Length: 263
Image 1 (cartoon, rainbow, N blue to C red):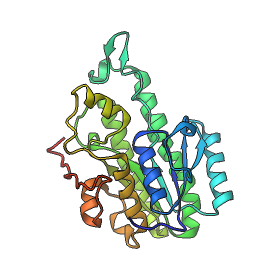
Image 2 (cartoon, helix red, strand yellow):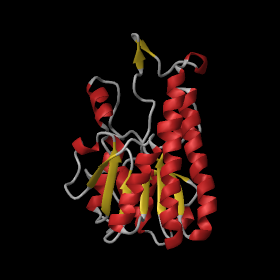
Image 3 (cartoon, helix red, strand yellow):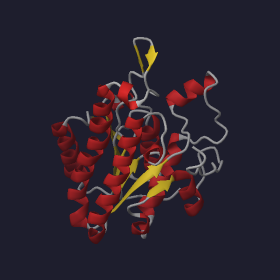
Image 4 (cartoon, rainbow, N blue to C red):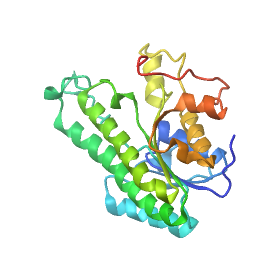
């Protein structure tokens, strides 16, 4: 694995799933890692990871988080935005609402995705940039998905992921003169706790799936790349980055990169 000794990383939404995997992989690569989330104290993370309870819809709490990182570590090299909302309460009153057309979608889902997802990434990226720009280095990576480019699930999900990609693309434009990179990351089918439970019920085929740590290895590879600005502003497929940088998943496999036609 790429070594990141001396680097400081913050991973939001790290209580479980992809965020937990990113935090674990960055720690394994040698970075000092802060992991934030509402239930992060109970997360299955390496002992060295510094857990900070934080609700990313609470600006004051997020500001305290960044103040702690700046005070204790004196720098921030990597921000991985994984905090998200809107996946909860997929079944309401016995009805599976996730795939409904936009005119039947519950309005709280829009607020959840835009506030706990897109806005949370904006606020964290804003505070990260204030530490990275003076240092003229840094990487901001936001977890996104193909729904930004193709209808997957529901219209609200697509709008939120498209907004995430646009945030990273425009942030990258403004950050480039200061040596800071910003990218979106597209994982494949990730073996999160929820996906594994669904696979056990026959919902998913895990043949080309990825571990949560695989996404973290992509972040680590980007963070260690002295020419990371070549990727800035782009939406990057995690499995394709594995081919570019030569890393494998935790089980030694090399998942096949997906394309828009695959999803």
